[in-house]
Length: 159
Length: 238
Figure 1 (cartoon, rainbow over the protein chains, first blue to last red):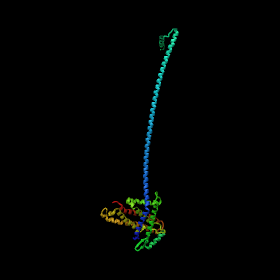
Figure 2: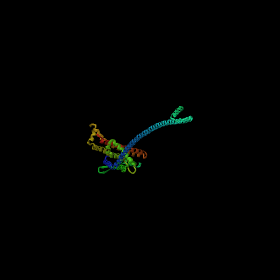
Figure 3: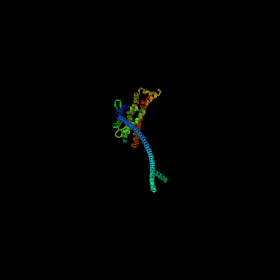
Figure 4: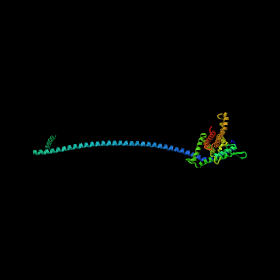
């Protein structure tokens, strides 16, 4: 049952032959494929990691941009509000001034008109009173002295 | 199958042994165990065909047989990386993968149903086991000398000269125990299977077949691990 014979040599040769033909015909394609797959998976994972980092960066960038834009919009609105307020204030002030001016000039005009009217009324009254006095006295009262006199009378009356 | 086994056992009883090796004198003084030879060739053919089919068209996304063979290769690659390092793995991959697959297939074909062919394991022959273990022991020295020069033998006197006898004893017993462990397990499995068929033709031997298939895998694994242990010295940096 345990005879050691030439089978031992034959088995060594058999086994070496098997190693040789497998190494020559079979292992290389299989091991190459396994290595290729390993590399592919590693590089795919790396790419995915890179893409993820890229996306992360883009996201942060967009968030920062959005915040900046929002801030800018806020400042634009604030400026617009300030400008509108100042324009509003200015218009109000100008209008007030103009209004006051108009009122003042109207007052002046009224005063002037009043004085004119009073002057005219006085002249008419003088003439009328002279005419009336002349008619009443049947005298010539056309001289300058007469007129002066009459005027003083009228003035006294009108006061 | 029980009948064939029984008949075979009967024949074995007549000739005084339970396992046949069909020892034949092919030339004067040269005796070859032909049964072992045939079974070795069958095992070699099975291993070759398995790898050859896969290697013809390896796919990026493996399936079926490719998955199975890649699982074995990956499993052995892991062990080689641990014991031999990255460089050693590239150097020894063909040898170790073939060793494991050949022993695995050899161990398992002895458990095939005895229909038409008288299936035995090539590893039930002490010649096969010694062939493999001596080949490993000698090639480990050869690889060691190729890689490290004659300084490879320095490990015989480390850590001191007093350890030389122990190292020599280790060098002798390692191939001896490797061969005898494999031989004993597989031969005992087959003998017990024949005995069980004589005791009970059904059911009970099938349990033993299942267990023997498992033992076949474990022994192939152990043999490969021990072979890696032998080669580890040749690839260690010292």
